[in-house]
Structures are given as C-alpha cells and as structure tokens.
Image (tube, rainbow, N blue to C red; front, side, top):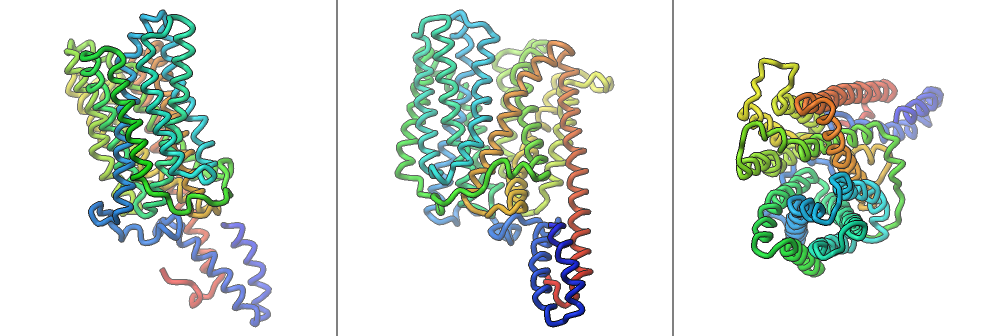
Length: 487
C-alpha cells in the first residue's frame, strides 16, 4: 500500500504544475486513502461485506429460513463430529493393548489424525470452489461416519501388524473426512454470514465442545451395554444419517462454483496472516498439552475416576459457554488485537496456577488452585482463536484477495491446518516436557509460550497501528483537505 502512495507522490508533484491533470490524480489518491482508512484501526474492516459490522447484531430468530437451515445443519453436524472424535480415546487404547500394540505406536495412530488434517486442509481449501462447499461438507461427514463404524469392527481384526495397518488407514481416511467437513463448514459460514463470522463460528465451536464432552460419557454407557463396537456403530450411524439428511436440508452456497484465483502461498506473504496462524497454533498446543499429562498430575489428590472426569469437563465446558460471547464481541466491538492479547495473557496466568509454577512458591499446590486455573483457561482460551478468523479474512483482503467463497475456502483451510499443527505438537511437547522436567515446569513452559504470544500480539498491533496512521498522514499531506473522503 505504501508503495502505491509513494508511486503516486511524484506524479502529483509534477501535475501541480499542470492543474488540468490535478483532478485525475486526486481521484486516484482518493481511492488509495479510502483503502487506508478502511484498514486503519479506527475502521478495522476487512472487506466491503464487513462494513458496518459493528452496527449489525446477530439474531438467530430473525434469520431467513434458508440461513436457519444452514446454522441448524452445521450445529448438528459439528456436535456429532465432536462425539465421534472423542469416542475413540477411552476405548481404543485398551483394544490396541489387547492386539499387542505398544503405547508408542498407539500414540502415532492418534497423532496421524491431526497430521493428516494439517496437510490436507490447505488442499481442500484451495480447491473449495472447484469441488463445491456443500458437496465437500456432506462427503466429509459421510466419510467420517463410515470410518467411525469401521473402527467398531477393529476388535475382530487379527493382532499385530494387520491391526496397526487397518487402524492407520481408518484414522487417516477419517481425518480426511473431518478435514473436508471442517474446512467447508468454515467457508460456508464466512460466505453466508460475512458480518457475523466470529459469532457463528463460536456457535459451531460450542456445538463441537458439547460433542467432545458428551462423546466419552455416551460411549461409556454404550460400551457397558454392548461392548467395544456399539458406541462406534451408534454414533457413526447417526453421523451417516445426518449426512444423508443434510443433502435435503443444507442449501447450496451462493457463488459455490467460480474460478479459482487465490493461493495459500500468497497468503503467507502477509505478517498479519503469520501472526494469526501463530496465535491459533499456540492456543491449540496449550489445549492439547493437558490431554496426555493432566490425569497423572491429579493422582496426587487421590480423586475418584468420576471426579477426575468432572474436572476434565471444566475447561471444554466453559470454552463452549463463553465462545459465543467472545465471538459476538469480536464481530461487534472491532477490537480483535486486544482480544487476542487478553486471551494469551490470561491463558499464561492459568497455566501458572495449573502447574503450579515452581518459580512462584507462594502459590500452594492445592486442588482448588488448579481448578481456578482451569476456569480461567476455559473462559479465555477461545479469545486466542475466535477473533483470528476475522484477522485472517482481513489479512487476505489487504493482500488483494476478493471477499468471496474462493477466499473463504483458502482461509478456512489455513485456519484448520494451523489448529491441527498445534494439536499435533501439543501432546508430543507435553510428553517430552513431563519426562524431562516434570508437570510443574512443563506447565510453566506452556505459560511462557502464551506470554510470548501476548507480547508479540502487543508489539505487532502497535506497530501496525503506527504504520497505518503514518500512511494516512502522508496521504492527507499529498491531497488537498477538500478532496479527502470523510468517514
């Protein structure tokens, strides 16, 4: 942007000697100033469709029938996808142990899910408009449901290498289905609700979070009722049925098929995009750090399994409850930078309490202190992710991307990939830290990562603010005050 203004300045200087050309040059500069004003902090809009975003409130009951069907379909399917994803953890490791599979290989089977999504999401996003978001979402849902059913048959598989190969195959194909579903879902909400992206995205995250909580409980009940396979058959079957119903419920997205113009690699030219990706990855790394390590840390308190399970529900439960609120703030208050900063700051504090940090000896290692840390984490972790979707959209538009479905597909693929990068590295980082320095120091290290992200956020947005105002001041000096558009 600054280069455009600098190129226009010599033209204007020469044209001052020829007043008959002044009008044309002024018009050109007016267009540049309009873009600068639109991307300045006081008018932090990412595109034409996002103008007046702060003035428009999201009201579910006031939506058209078509948009209600979109929201209902996506919320229902996200709930079932969350159930299917969380169903595997309580039962599969036991079955793998019976089939002579080591813990290391079991860990790789679990990690292959996030790794597959990390690689495939940008590909799906890049070809969103070629394939069509509606077809991609339904196909992904049907694929995920089919693989969930197949997982229920693994107890009949021969032990050893055949079991490992089939497990990897099912897990990776299921991950491809999840990747297609989530990537197309993000693109659809960005296209259907361009002024309320954060709010609708938070609703889907809430549905997914509830599914993650319900899945293990429902799976446990079905396991006691009918053995290993019943939970996979029931939830996989419900997911397949939902995919079939969505063929009739989910309307075709507007501009679903258009020429593909943008590329993922082009997005990576923007520091704004890089910062957003970093924030997403840090948030997911922090969440997944607790998965393989936290239950062992709680053993010192001699808690019953039911109480440990209840403690595990605190963070995802509060995440689901608070996400819609933070999404609404992100959409209406135009303060994404401050929200991301606050989220990382509070998450850093939460891990100091969850440890607790040995560098803060005045914090007692009590259960109530850990619970306070989990409450803070669940309340503020969504701030590290929900506003970033708007930031990614804004960064894409600043690079010259059009505000259309093609761009939304690329953005959603990048978001999903960044999240799974953190999800993939989080358990590994947690395992290494616990083995070498213990949980207390490991939690302190994760806290330090969040504090670093908060400092980086503060530095980035302050620098961005100063640069944008400097550009605006230069442009106002070039143009006569009468020709500067008022906003």
